Image 1 (cartoon, rainbow, N blue to C red):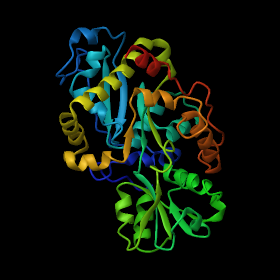
Image 2 (cartoon, one colour; image 1 turned 90 degrees about the vertical axis):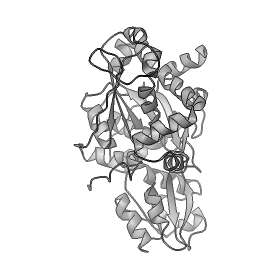
Image 3 (cartoon, helix red, strand yellow; image 1 turned 90 degrees about the horizontal axis):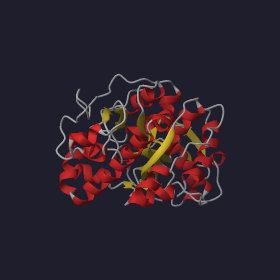
Image 4 (cartoon, rainbow, N blue to C red; image 1 turned 45 degrees about the vertical axis):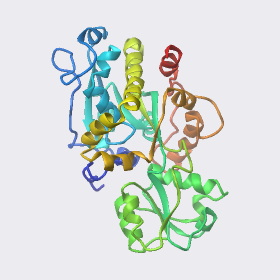
Length: 360
């Protein structure tokens, strides 16, 4: 598989995770930044105090995160000392290559990581034990099915040549769109093509439609007469992102896991109250200007605590993780990414978000 482009240009590496993880990819490009010094205190904290950090009940929680707008708030938590404010010792590792974070989590090098629902389920199906404790966000337009002028509706996809990277979230998005009008993959001429190659080929007129994520959406839209037929904004919940931890961390240090979740929501409060300062921090981590970062962030719907709690519910639509997971499972098997479906028993733990909401 071709190596992903640098994250300064490609802020949405996360969508590549499923396929590359299934191929056993490893990363040599992780860029490590730590939230704790040797004495257990955050080295660049500007708020909070060391007494809170001492309340943590063990070694620093090793947490990985990657280049995605729904996860960049963790850089704010680190810089502003919000982990210490919440009383938990967290050592953040930033991965310029999202795939590297998946490998590190699977190898037991991390206590937790930021991951898509698809990738988490892939890991579980492969034998890893992982638990989702926070829903960070939904993709809200950063993944899209783009077509030429011959396609005006989803129904028009029948018989058309549609390219997407097989097994990744844009392939899954395509199937959800087809299903919404009673079509299946058998009704189209599907071509499994790597995302960058698919975007370039579509721009050159090779396919009728393509499924890609930003910024490859921009490249695809360079084709004259092309347009977004539908996107992740039309299917909310189809592509969700999370903080995932090991069950051992929950069993051995439930109080610290609660503080970690508290720190996430305290960070969102800080961002809401200090939008310009927070945007500067997140843009700097993404190596973008605040204006550039704002354009990327618009395609991501970050959840507040109430919205996140609702995602753990049993409603029969895409607002429920359980519901979407039951759609993803056969997709993983039919795409031959996994031999068996992922067990959903114990995959979702809303208790920490529930406690935060109860105490707010």
